Image (cartoon, rainbow, N blue to C red; front, side, top):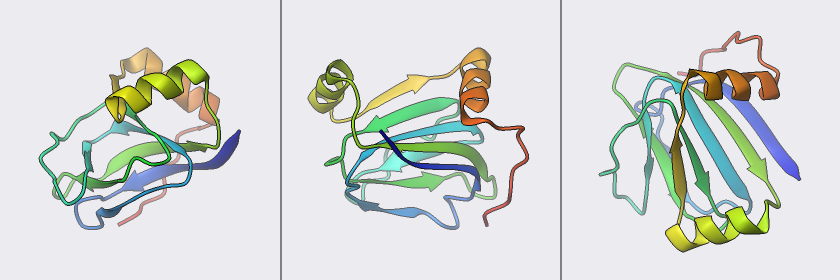
Length: 121
């Protein structure tokens, strides 16, 4: 079940998200700009564009971004997901999938975006 939905422009460089454990499954897609997950204070993950990440409820993570370049993101939190996806993600700790333009269009359509972004600085 979907428990949270959000979108918009995020400047994770000037306002990084601290590492913490969410109580639900988090799907976060960056559809323009670049972001990267942060794990227990380690920011060595490479900044990525056009990517969808999936984290399990016990997967502590935060977010960081590129200096002076906000990113457009879509965030979905679910209380439950399929058993197969649950098992795959828990085996790996998290999943990331590169998105192409048709994937991004699909996500925007499912999200119901006319793509008018508010600025979060």
